[in-house]
Length: 268
Length: 228
Picture 1 (cartoon, each protein chain N blue to C red):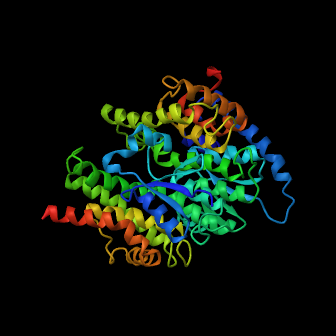
Picture 2 (spheres, helix red, strand yellow):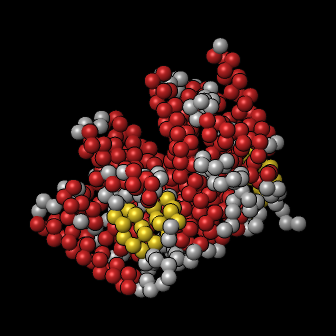
Picture 3 (cartoon, each protein chain N blue to C red):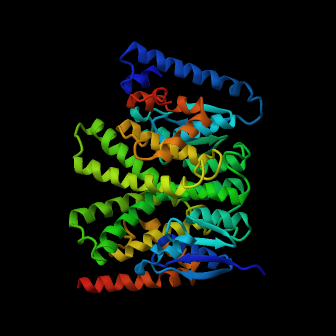
């Protein structure tokens, strides 16, 4: 882990080191019991992920909340570990995270993984309902979010944070402005349509839709975007999501908090 | 008999066509409710009551309103109103179809829809000039990257998921057919598996396939002759 921290430029100060360590100790403590309870014929699923990836964090939080045992397989995107031939052949032919291996059955695409595990009874109904009418509301959000919220938040993050880091070139103001406009058009829909009359995106309680959406929005923190300024409903909803998912939410977002320099402690 | 679902759609929308073909092919009864996007009928207050996102396709089932094609497929399937071959019920098979349906959004669908929008929809409506050749080349490159992924990663068998037609094929083919409007045709030498698969999907889903695409074919011809 310290290697990843170094790569992310997080291991400069000793204070950072200590906070990271605390986070990972906590994360390991939470993992231990699930590993001990896997006294079954089938082994637990292998979960390949990187907490820098939004859907990776979403599934990580969902698995933890579900109490589902899984084998931790961290893939360092920064090292290009997903781009090797071995990864393509043995783990995920699309060379992305997250993905799983369930006793030989390889599956990619976070939403498909969620549905598969739900069908196998691993995801509690309060997170992803089994009753089809309720489930379809959550599905409606999950399908909607790809080409709207997910795409535009990810593009903003890439343009403002990732690409300058990789290329050394700063994007023009006009380009950032355009990316922001695309993103805010979708944040408007979250604020005005999805959160119009309920505490959570698809009803009065936390569902997987909220977790997927929050992880996408949190990613923009790293590009110094603060969603809470313009969007009071999103602001209040993000707090509710974090509270409902903690301690797992903060563990999953440790790097996001670090890189953005915006811990949630100051905001609560 | 209870009232069948109402399907709101426009044949100019790729997911509308995929859903329409799937319902026809699978013999799911529905009420035909066409919405003319070219007349901006989706933007009326009346339609907003049907679908708060003001897009097509959408369904109404009694008092229940649902948007997003994949979510609609899943809803109808769970109600027993969707063909089981097209959207399988066993966990493993369904997971494979779902993997494609989730993958396509930010891959084949995005690449084809950006190309369509920039090189046909916007110019034809006077919203933007025709893109410069370099930009068009970039759109084509994005499309072809994804056709390459279909060729290498998805088309190991006759159809995207195994040996027979599923909704995955209908979703995939319909996106690629959309860019005929931009005068793009899949090159059978460059993407032999994709080209054969498109033909197989067409045969397996006809006569509905061609019926849903009549308008696209006609417009594509018009666009071609306008250039000459």
